[in-house]
Length: 485
Image (tube, rainbow, N blue to C red; front, side):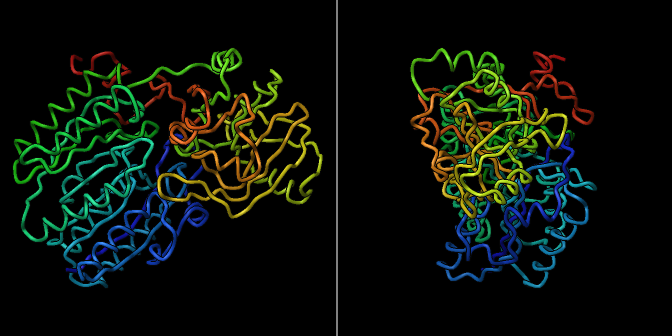
């Protein structure tokens, strides 16, 4: 058997004013056929799994591009075209391949293409019409007709936060292997749940539903069940949650199961989603708490969803309330990082922090600070992978508020983002992190309570306020019952 593998991943916030360019991939992760020689991250875990399994079976493996960028606005067309050409050229040079496995995001939009993943797999299909083509997707993906038409297998992460990338990679490999051997004949069908929201899978009704999906996979004829949550901040026609079912040669079973599970998910829409509090309410609750620390999620400025990562709305209120024994971050501010590097550890200076990129960033904070520490070349864990942090600076204000700023736009995943600088989170009363949900598991071990705050910003969780031009407005929560409209 001959196996071809590659990764192309970024999540596109079409409302963002920051273009995704080659520099974004170079800063985060870019490897030309050598990703499996490097430590894995979330989007290269699959490449490591696929190579190891293939080589254990004596297969020939061709590894192509691995390109990953922090989410932002649409990818510039020259960048996407170049990466697409590199993958297709490597595929042609590999000769006749039996299986193509791609780790993609599923929500990549370029200036000239609303469906980069569908475009790529359609060209892969043209290049090797008889190969088994399988793709693994982040669950915040869009399922499109082009993807469904040109792939034999599509599997999405089941967990949010994403800690099952390796499990899904193993699943996809085994199904692709069985397909290539003629043991199974996968058929895919999906169902539009007509829902746009965020779904934390670790507890409550959403945990139960994910477990139900897993149990459904044990039924005769069912090969795989995925829920594509969708990426809300993308103005494309296919945005929204879709249920995907793969069966062994049975289109009716696939259709019926996708419809049944998708309808059940819709019926649970109020149970699987959460309400988020305002900045004032979140801080009021945190101050009134008798158990510390309290973790506040700055949801509206999650760079992992394409927000700038430099907003000051929550930070300003913390400063105005003089909430000492507080840690907050990470604010993306490479200009201030450079100033701090020049000044050095121990320097005391007046610094203008954040509020630089867009209206959603708010106004900058002018603070007198001490540079407590500076670290470069460090990372933070997301699942098994280690995600880069760039250069990070720990600042302390006159009111004993610890602030992290950095040079590489990224959300907070893990307490080690603070602890590697020397910030002792156990001593804090409030920890404010720029993230949506990925921080949840690791920080739940540090914090006594977690409060999700609906801050202003590029990833505001007010899904009624998003103004789509390309998506049919008939979705929940925009309308209460879209199946009756």
